[in-house]
Image 1 (cartoon, protein in one colour):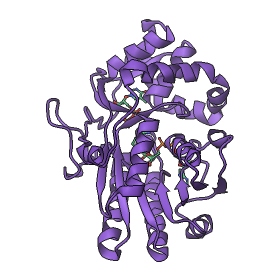
Image 2 (cartoon, rainbow, N blue to C red; image 1 turned 180 degrees about the horizontal axis):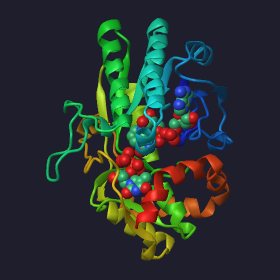
Image 3 (tube, rainbow, N blue to C red; image 1 turned 90 degrees about the vertical axis):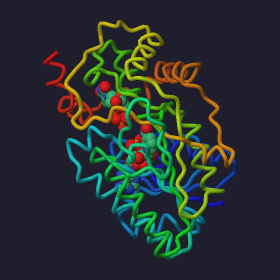
Image 4 (cartoon, rainbow, N blue to C red; image 1 turned 135 degrees about the vertical axis):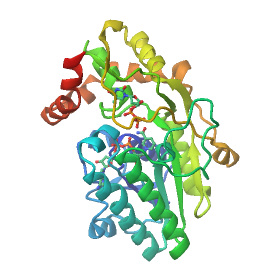
Length: 331
Ligand code: NAD
Ligand code: TYD
């Protein structure tokens, strides 16, 4: 099948391209190459590349020529950046999704929206994991924009009969992740002996899902998901401080690098999702966070400094200062 993978130069999108190429699918990538997009992620993978914006109907039409399906990974994806500047999130995550859906409708293409467990908002400790019919209670500008994209998908299914499905994945980890989210930021900082800024008490909880397992779920939904179907993709739940301790263990960095800093506004305490629906289609994860997943990821960053060091550019340093300077000065 010829598939348009939007955001294919990003973290999870590039893992998805690797997976499809290995299976012999024909892959076209449409990516704007924002700070998070990196063509090096696609090195050695046979694909057709278009640099462009999913919110631009002309770029979408050009890239989608001959494709039978669109899988939409393109997004502004980092909560902290959405707090500093929410507007771009609406343009890409809501308007961009709507432009892609319109193309899928007009050309009769299969469509998969790669969404997030964050649209359910946080759930109390001890509460059952969210199922797909849980209410949307987004907390951050990021999760609100992803929820807006999801609602567009469901509206296009119902109103126009578009053959679209949604995946809602947990916090994803693995190689090739831009060093701004918890895992790659703390791993690269620990390898460089830099401070590790833990927001608040560090007792927040997330589920950790390997990028390859996440992509296996998205592919299954692409091939077998129902129109209008929503599918959670779960990970393994951990408290943030447990994750930080694991990073210290695997990097050998000093616990003295840990700083408890001013919390993120609106910070969700816990995400957890029920993936029974996807498991019923045949999905099960093949990586374990505790036995191997985190260790392998740390090893990848240790061995691939030439991948991440150039990403800590002047633009990155400006973002880092805006996000962390006052927090780290205070501690
Ligand atoms: P990422 O930030 O690493 O990559 C996003 C990619 O999209 C980049 O290559 C970027 O250049 C591209 N992009 C951004 N705006 C674009 C636009 N307007 N047009 C075309 N391309 C554009 O993100 P990621 O972590 O790989 O996440 C991929 C998808 O998975 C996102 O939709 C995200 O919401 C979702 N998701 C991520 C996680 C996670 O933990 N990272 C978890 C669940 C769901
Ligand atoms: P993050 O990787 O940004 O993912 P999300 O907020 O989308 O779940 O953050 C994961 C958890 O780690 C979250 O509880 C916030 C916390 N965190 C820190 O404590 N310090 C940091 O510098 C970052 C980026 C995240």
